[in-house]
Image (cartoon, rainbow, N blue to C red; front, side):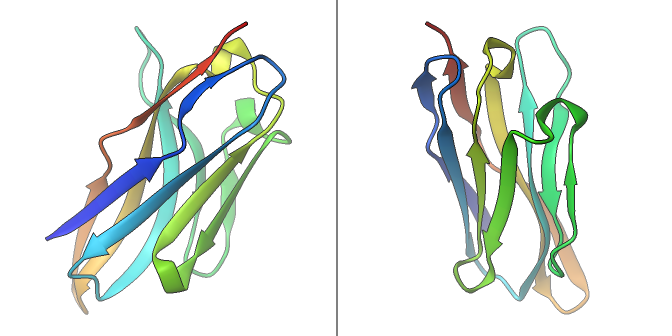
Length: 120
């Protein structure tokens, strides 16, 4: 069994910064892609950023130039540095990871989410 636990959400003023963390734990053989998605009230879940094991990164159009994703493979952890935050960034942010529990068995795991509120 594997688990993703997010941390770092909260209330921040427009223009401010936050850093999210997501740590994977459990029976992990290896980690492939890790990433962040978000869902605002009334909206569908959307891509924020993903990072593959080899380092390839993909960002959603709305966060390019403001958010930075990174990972620490030794700690099975992915981070999201969010700068120049806007009210429209307000959402629940979910961590996602493709986790191999055996050499040929993978799980697409999701965290429970952490709320980010951007408001003055």
